[in-house]
Amino acid sequence: MTRYMKRIADEELDFRLETFGAVQVEGPKWSGKTTTAERKAKSILKLQEMVDEDASFINMAKSRPSSLLSGLKPRLLDEWQLVPALRDAVRTDVDKNHSPGLYILTGSNSINEEEVKHSGIGRITRMKMYPMALAESGESSGQVSLSSLFNNPDKGIADCISTLSIEELAFSICRGGWPYSLFLNSDKSKLYIAKDYLNGICNIEISTVDGVRRDGQSTRLLLRSYARHVSETATTTTILRDIDTRPVIKSEKTLSEYLTALEKLFVIEDVPAWCPAIRSKTAIRSGVKRGFTDPSIAAAALGLGPEALLKDMRTFGFLFESLVLRDIRAYTQLLDGHIAYYRDRYGLEADYTIHLDDGRFALVECKLGTHQIDQGAENLKKIRDLIRIANEKKSQAPLREPDLMIIITGGKYAYRRDDGIYVIPIGVLGP
Image 1: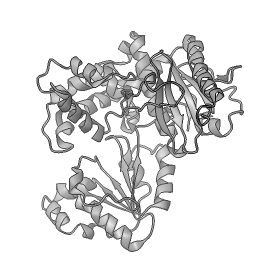
Image 2: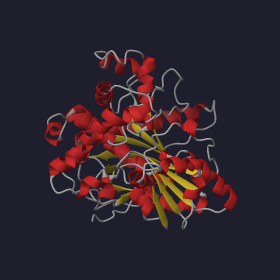
Image 3: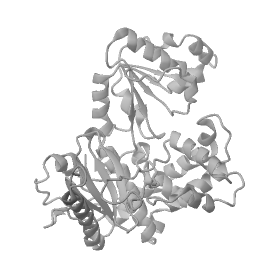
């Protein structure tokens, strides 16, 4: 039996169960949703197992979904989407009992939302769970806490040294944060999980997510195009041009439908633009930056393994940025944070910006190689200076200056530069 590895989501799930009647845990398949939920539940109903034992179970469940709610609370309803009416029954029971921590719902989320009558707002909270970040898989020491940096930015980070080699970093990107893969014996098996995940999305899930039949090969070409433009602000026109050899996806409307399906499956998750009033509206780019929920999906779509990645440092750099995105998304969950990016038509950019709900924010640059650190630092300082200049003009409400400026690297040493910018290897970063 594999041992349970502590997840960042454990603490968030505890909090939500203390606050709401029910928690719906969402996220990519194989990210550990059910395993994490099982540790919090006092009774469990696995609907897929019930269906496998008796095919008539679904008909009974659809006619009397409330009969499935009996059991110690919190009660886990796994693969709840097999009986969409079950969610409405949960909402009704939460209303009746006026008590938090009654139900946890997990599943693939492959459901037509029209089959659910009520949104469940105020009763059922939605919580997103990502594949494992490096601090969860044990590949990052987690010595440098993102939360502590925000709350105590003057605290030193000396003597924090990453032991993650560049070869191990390439392997981590291609293997991904799929919990099951960590317990496999061979590297070949570990790397195959992401490949099989990609096959499942293209051959099965893309057509079951909303009941619309879609072409698997076109999906594969679309994901390959997406992977080519990962961490970039590629337009739908650019992506469509990449896959124009397939007659199935030949319009932006069809492309949009495929992308929506992939979003529902938590395969892709783009990054919105941060548009502060420091330049004219026409100067700041407002399109989304293309992203995956895990970098291994992009590597699999491109057909790249660790050895190939080490020979293509440009692609390695983009996938490293994708890895950073996955990890900081996970690390900011407990901070109620969200991620964006900044880029303008003059070439000035911050790969990511981390925003907390109290107004604090950080500018983040991702630099795989340490020789790029100075360039990243200059970008961050220029954005900070633009904010200062805008405030000096006093023609608008003052803008907050960044609380943190961070360069996340694939290097070895963590330190704070003389200009106040933190340089942090991904191998020591944690929540």
